[in-house]
Amino acid sequence: QVQLVESGGGLVQPGGSLRLSCAASGSIFRINAMGWYRQAPGKQRELVATITSGSSTNYTDSVKGRFTISRDSAKNTAYLQMNSLKPEDTAVYYCYFVVLQQIGTTRGFWGQGTQVTVSS
Image (cartoon, rainbow, N blue to C red; front, side):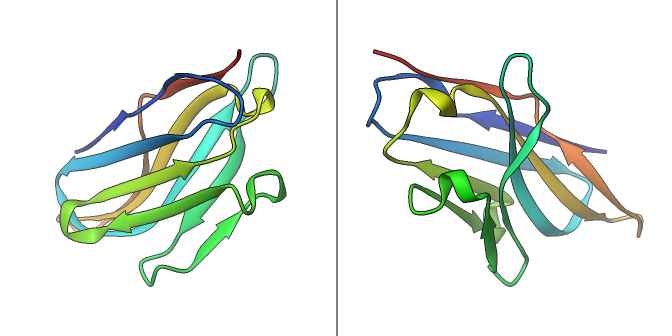
């Protein structure tokens, strides 16, 4: 089994910054794609950013130029640097990793979620 633990959420004023982390542990052979999703109250969960094993990145339009996804493969960790935060970025943020497990199967795993609130 694989566990994902997120950290770094909190309350920040508009224009501020936060850095989220997501660390994986367990039966991991290799982590392929890593991603961050978010879900605001009353809305569907949406994809925010992804990063491949080759460090290619992709972002939803609303965060381009403000958010940066990165990874430390040696630590099985993904990061989401969020700058110039806006109230509409308020949501629960979830990480999602596609993991090749030591038993040879590939599947996705979710983090527990971390609250990000942007408010003055």
